[in-house]
Image (tube, rainbow, N blue to C red):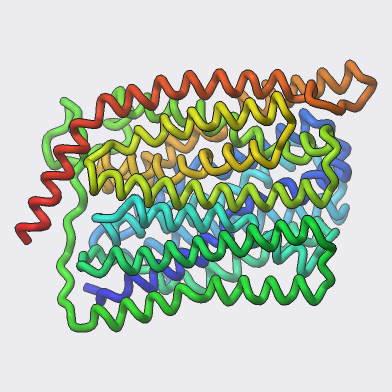
Length: 516
């Protein structure tokens, strides 16, 4: 078995990969260049954006690949191993997709048909699912007692990655979104190839896991706060080049700081003899599955709980992703400046991070303290999203509305995978949670293309080719509010069905830990 500190170095490497994986949240930076270079209207741009969302969230192939090639007992990422193949599959798609997009937007290749752009947009974002699946499943396997916190850290840095990448854009390519596309092709590719060999699975459990995880969480919070402050100042003042270089250098130093946590963990655990920790048994055993057997995808899909979680995700993720896809157009219709619009795109990543981190951390605390079921937090965040959508639709205040929606949206990406692992077990977690993640592009198609896109284009045509004011998006956000209320019904039903199992399983796990 690998020594115990492998999981800490693996965590650091996974964090760094997550910091470059969230390219989907930077669409607002280059969407205008894509739209103008290809001569698209808003509905066509939303179609391309839909394929972006499909690529980023249809992770079934990544889950199946992980399950097929990763050694369940001793996963490692040495070159040529099963786990390395998952990362390499993502690297190839990331580079190919964004590099071709760069060639199209710069005119090196003549304007292609829309379906060609959609294909490479899909490929570029589909890479994220391979990075994310490997990092999340490795984190859960390495920290089974604190899976919510571990997933929150991974998903949190993924949520911050958009803001990080945009800061690099401002430093190196400000005002040149086409160059940013080339950066998105090269940067994640090089980083993955450099650090993926550090990633291992070592499901050991020691009493020191939680303090070290908390230190990773603290670093993430500090980075999020730093990014928020920088973005606010960039919105108020015009930063000279030296200021961009200085702030980005500080950011990079912060991103490197988790190494110190890993080395501290290694020193602390040198004298300890970690014990292998068993794979978590599923919380809910369907009638067709025997005790102690974890569900595969087909077995999970045969349960009511799978579909309650899936439908809740459609209702909560769809309207939110439609919002991020249309920030630029909403800002323009409400007379926000380009600087403010770009700031909101970056701040979305910050709020998204707070939700991802908070959803895992708070629900872990709630579960360990009170035995409370995590689905309750999905219901709470959906109710808060109703407030956020009403603020956007009725007042046009994008700043306040996006804070609420961004935090609540982000929390789903730590809650949903954690709930999946607890309800259906860890063995096929990658395949199951990526299948449930299909709710995001399905919701995007319904609410981004069929609702907000069509309503906006109709308003534009009625006013001679442009639309300014609240009426451009008001009806869409009233619809979003109603959809979230429907989602509460699904998530709260799941909470009622599982709350007894969460409480009893907590007690069972505590007894097992005390008896070891």
